[in-house]
Each structure stands twice: as structure tokens, then as C-alpha cells.
Image (cartoon, rainbow, N blue to C red; front, side, top):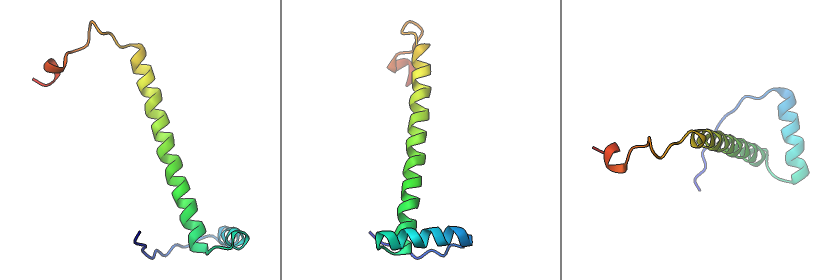
Length: 76
């Protein structure tokens, strides 16, 4: 995996907390930040998936086979 340098400006308290976490786990500050960002992005993707599942479930409740279009009708 290629890595790219990124400069980020952080609040002093956030920086202190990140440094403490890095020291506790014996990893670099960069690694901690990367893990947190990856986790946050995965969480957002999961939340989006859950929202889409709920939307699909709601739509499924009102689905009517009698009123639905066939594959051919949709793609004409």
C-alpha cells in the first residue's frame, strides 16, 4: 500500500491524547491517526448501509407485485 504524507493541524488537547494512545500501544502517532480515520470512515459506511437497509425495508412494505413493472417494461 502506498502511503502519502499529510499535514494536519490539531488542537493541543487532541494532539496530547493521540500521543498518549500512541505511547500506550507503542506505535507512531501517524499510525494511531491512520487507524482512527480508517475506523471513522468504516463506521460512516456502515451507518450508510444501515440507512439504506431501513429504506429498502420500508419500501418493501408497500411493494405490490400487481402494480410492479416487468423487466421488459422498465428497459424499453
